[in-house]
Length: 197
Image: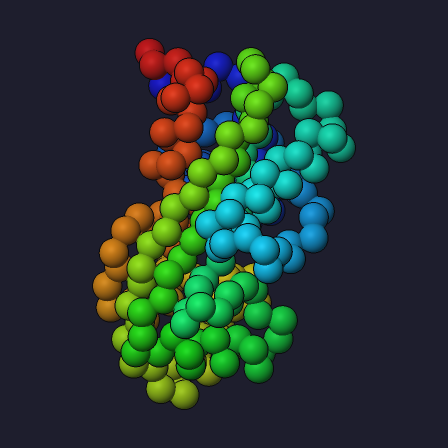
């Protein structure tokens, strides 16, 4: 199985890069420098789809890639109707992890795919509920010191030591990592961008 066109990932996320590489995709990374602010007029699922769409649009407009498949994604954590994006500093990272301790939260990822055949951008989203175990200060401080929470929505990564904090999940695991693979596959298949051979 392979794509009919060259692939561009409009993201600098090492998690998204790894997820695609582990599944045999060859691709080029082009970063999308957009303002990742949420619009108060849109729901969470609409916001993450819009940001994913904006990332793809940025790459389309900046580079000569209109003949390639482009993937964009955006992931946020929502707890008690509050958006927990990437923490700005250690204080905010500690606050996020303390909030999530012994509670459920929801991870939303928006995904966007540019189809070079019909010049369209298709968007979708995934959401996954995650239950954290009860964390103490020692665990929170250890994680912050050793696992770079500032580049992760909600200040944790389920693919690293943060996995030990996750008691259970309801939904797509890969969505929590940052790229909902089934949603991506569904779009690529619906748009007939795969060659199965």
